[in-house]
Image (tube, rainbow, N blue to C red; front, side, top):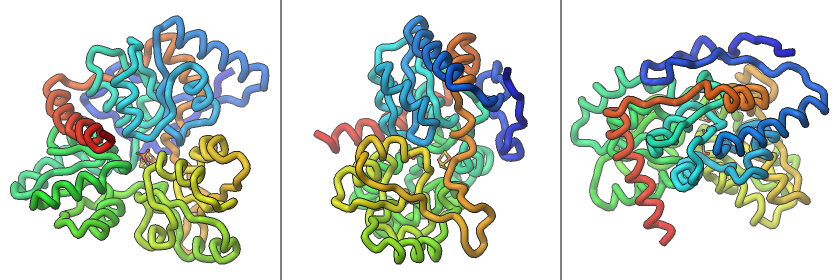
Length: 356
Ligand code: 13P
Ligand code: SF4
């Protein structure tokens, strides 16, 4: 039986005009037995084959979804690698388990493919906090600046940008632009923006956006936890506030943090990013211990909210349903797509040159 739940963040999540018309309302996961779970996993694997589909999942999604992607020749990755993989894989359908901008990026790069998502209601506070009708005039008011936007944005915002970047390549792109003498307009994440600004010394005008998950990490409580575990290394995603980043041993994208967990000699880690990443960290370093960085403490509104409510909207039931019915298809208007592709392809070409 399926229990229909109300969308936990409906107040912020709004349907954008360029998206699929056939969006289905999000349905929360009902309790299921172990036998039902196994049945669903089998059904999804069979459907992926039957529909010539590849599953691309972000590290923050449910462990079972990551496991299915791994076991079916799909991919579990950060947002840059998700974009790259979808581009290179021959499947005619891509199923993107993550948040909406990830599905849109897949469509921008693969217009000939069908791109489906388990739900179209999974958005992102960075994307929602940077509406095109406010962002475009802001760019127009600063024509002397190169517009660099984070991948966590709508297709329309990407279309107005000169560059799209993800957290794994952002510092290198800004260094490159600074070396060319360019002044930057950065959007939407102010924490990532000021981290890059501090690191590179680039002239950056910052949009005032934030990730509700990473912004909740608390520096004072993190310092106290670190004092209790002095041998633990602190891994921080750069969407976190500066005071949290200051306590980090490693700052990086999700892939870079997993790699650090594998590579560093420490046996214990305190991790300031979505706890969904523990699935891959445990695989990468099964003999090490991972602790969530605290989101409690002065001014906190939750005990441990290190989990993205939108990523959590992806589940086995809606994944199976999407594959079965072809619902929740992503569409991007061709004119918007062409412009968004220009800025996104620039990042992929730059990343390609960087690893040569
Ligand atoms: P990554 O590019 O590091 O995977 O980050 C995406 C994201 O949404 C982090 O909150
Ligand atoms: Fe957006 Fe933050 Fe969720 Fe990542 S964790 S998708 S940045 S709200």
